Image 1 (tube, rainbow over the protein chains, first blue to last red):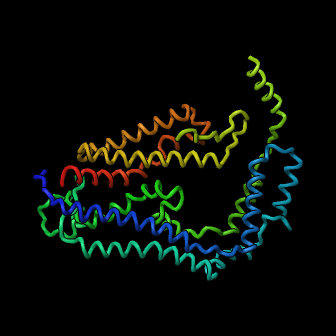
Image 2: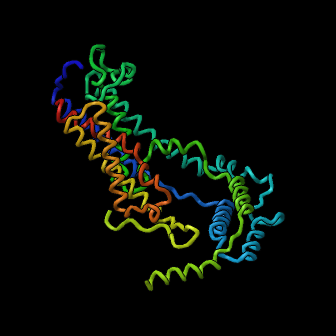
Image 3: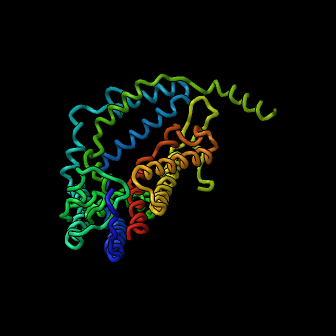
Length: 246
Length: 114
């Protein structure tokens, strides 16, 4: 490896530390702002009902083996009866919730607010970094990288003989962006921590397509083999008592 | 962590029943410990001055120590507290990597370059 560059202490004082501090503070600020701006959406009765039905069906599936066979069957019939069973949704109504979600102004506003609160601080910080902190070596990454990364990491530095480990402040910004997620999850309590990247991944699936959920629950219920566990509990009690007595 | 790991599974019955809330709490505990330790490992690696591959090896060593520590805390019977062994051992390995690299770079630069 080439000789070690000695960098000015002023860079450390005025670039690295302020940038990290600013990013941490912006993250905390964003967290509090999102908490303040949280407009509680007025719940839609139909979607809420379907959600509760699904929860009931799941409870039935979980506790199926603790009730006698006939009770289980009668409950299951209540859910999956062809005519007025709760889980049976005629085909026409299936796609409603999703269409509703797109056209409902409240939902759209919420999505947009979340998007903006995520994108604007990032863009602003990035522009600030580019404007003030470009054109010099900011940090050295402790591990070697190949030459392909040179254009990505060293964008402000025009010398091509400098080792790729010496990066510009733009890459320090990106490193902070990804690395501070863990710190936020420790500082800000356990929720709302993994803001940007996870939310971006969640934007894809809009959650609640109710008809598929209901159909899946119905199939799950139909598939259960009932195996009543209570008769075995006598033996279980016996074994527990034996252990206690020994 | 203290006494914050709660039993989430009742192994006495034939049918394993989970307490969802306790399970999630235990997973949170694992995640927090790993994140915290990866940050500390990063600072240590930077101060000691690891270079290149040695640093990553150090990170994995610390993660393994974390796994062993968590297993010891759970009394070596992960079945009581989690739904599968893999969660205790391998969950969050790579999640802490970015934080580790950040703090490693930071400490290394502060100590060695400037």
